[in-house]
Length: 561
Image (cartoon, rainbow, N blue to C red; front, side, top):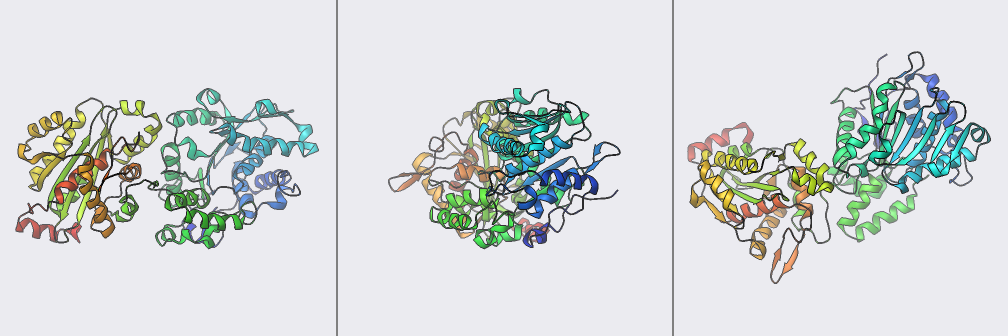
């Protein structure tokens, strides 16, 4: 049997309101049996308490059919065992979860089998349990077949002894489970938890001995840049959908805007809300969405981005707060594909300045390189950061994000104190060796170890300068803002740096502005402060370090074209 879970034409399908599941159920009889059970469930909280078959739209039935229609009754194996549903808020996700898992409990043949709906909080758990309870109590047949225990949030099948339990997640709750089916609700919340990956591994580990088992990851988009297990699963799902990864056992159903629509700003038009809201007009009120668009826009960009994330599934790349750094508004649009490595700057630039900041056990050690591009005189930016594992312990809330940055290659987790400074020194010497290094700007406080490492690597002492911090850095901050707004400063689009820009908080100081770690709270901004240090130097317009022959060779290099 041949099938593919990739949906290469999804952008056309989603705009045309077509199915995002690119194949028919693998076993139609199994799908039909499940739809009969699912369709007979009663949606008690809807007006008139209709049956599911009377009220759900085709996309819901298609999703249900894909899950249960992947089960091969001859071998007892489910050929597609993992599913991901990304859908906007209020599209009936919790009710769908209730219906799917209740259907699985009814159809299950395994004695004392376990089914779990795993939610990050008690409130979210109740969103799924209450519809399950009401569905059972509204049907005489189900009431005779299933025992409901509210205090345990558990439904038990009288004949098989199988259970469906809705739990608010923690490691003790899910350890040792041998679940046949697991529905993970609001994965984006789990993505913010340091222990989520291990906890979910415990919850889903039972499938190793349950070939008929399945996992369903269901979520809305995050209200902050995606992180942790949510980011991992979302990136994987997109690659499967786009055909970059061939995984026939994983089915992604992702209601999100095509990139060309995001680039054109079409997601900001209320008339396109249907794209990520397949239940628009049923569980999603059109008037509410229209009012939400208008109100959120009046409340400012920060509020509007939050509205787009939850109700339009628009991924937040850079969080903008009311007291944000002005340059953050222009940061994302200045990303390019050719500043991904320091070597790119060395090939393209006539002079490079470096900035360094941080390095404490509770900090990141940030390095920024700002080069003036040969010919165009644009400023090209590259950044990197280092962290000791102790930061992951001290900042547990940010640990999933730091691990993401490390996997991306934008942050290095060092094993020993001092390795980070050694790496910085080697990096700085590579710029010096290229003949392009102008100067290195550092925070005068705590400069000792960094200066020693730089000088030992071969950096001349006169090229290491202290950059005054506090309000005196205001000129560099404003220069960076203007360069970004004018399109004259570009960067490699690193998620780590976007996060740092979103963390920056501005305090006015007389006729200057101030960005400090104290103003930004526990959020890390060290690479951004390193950027301001480098900007302080490059804004002095240092002479080009590249000779005529080198300049002509750079211009002829294909990377320059």
